[in-house]
Length: 277
Picture 1 (tube, helix red, strand yellow):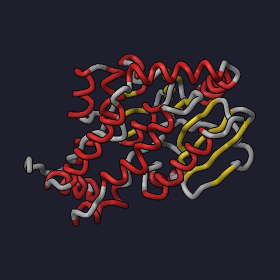
Picture 2 (picture 1 turned 90 degrees about the vertical axis):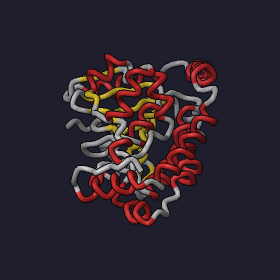
Picture 3 (picture 1 turned 90 degrees about the horizontal axis):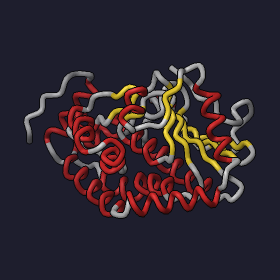
């Protein structure tokens, strides 16, 4: 599996959170999800760290281009179900609050950041990990990477903006296929479908990503910011409403028997037995 080399990876991070690292190199800052032992799955701490990192980088005028990637063999495997399993089983999970107060501000913080952001997808981008990648302006993937809207496997629905990002990029027909069947989409096919911009051989991936981000850092930052505003207005004019719908619907799903069974089956490493309840 490919591993992205962040811009300043030969030295220490410029800022180290508990679950996220920042690497600064000139006008470029890399945000690295840093839970490699859990395939960079999102727990409460990662959500808090990533939100602060996005706000910090977004507000720094010295940063002209941003790279988001994952440590180890994954970009992000999605929500950490092991950390949330007990809450799901007991019916006490507050998904709507987490989405509204943490996840969605991360996603929209990237979309509204007045500088270009590149997702360097070095491995699986699943669930909220896929949402994070698609919130970026350009998506570059290693050939060995894949993308998956895996929510329905555990009785849940897409969130973190993925219900709109995927449909906008690939169309309703393919979005329904990805969301309902939850099948992984290889990087090359993701480019063919329009979900990603690039799929490079693993051995070329770090260098290609670095060249792409450097090109953006050397470019017309104000024009890039204007382009993002235009695209956001045209494509994401109803984004806030859609994110609210996702949060409400996901909270509803977490109360179903199917979601409890789906999460339990995932943790027990067996096939779920859904009943439609």
